[in-house]
Length: 72
Image 1 (tube, one colour):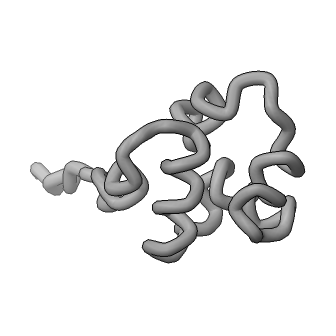
Image 2 (image 1 turned 180 degrees about the horizontal axis):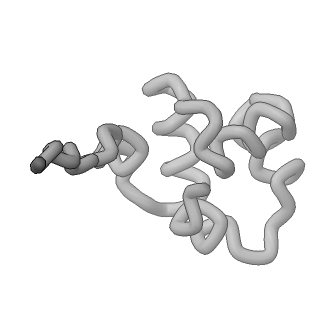
Image 3 (image 1 turned 135 degrees about the vertical axis):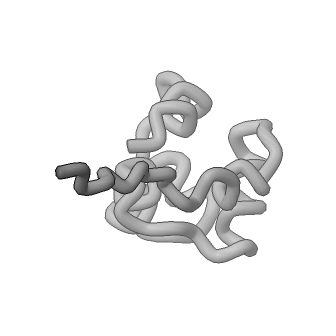
């Protein structure tokens, strides 16, 4: 979940933001949930609408996981 995106949306509905950036509410919801990444164009439109740097969508894409070593 992208809590930071929900925080930026504030009291506006997902539907309102989706309409403003020309995507479906479902697509926007999936972006908020982290189930979908926006295209660069959509990321820029969302960022412009909500007032943040669009590149944040593409930072920390990889989740760091530590490999457990098998010690015997």
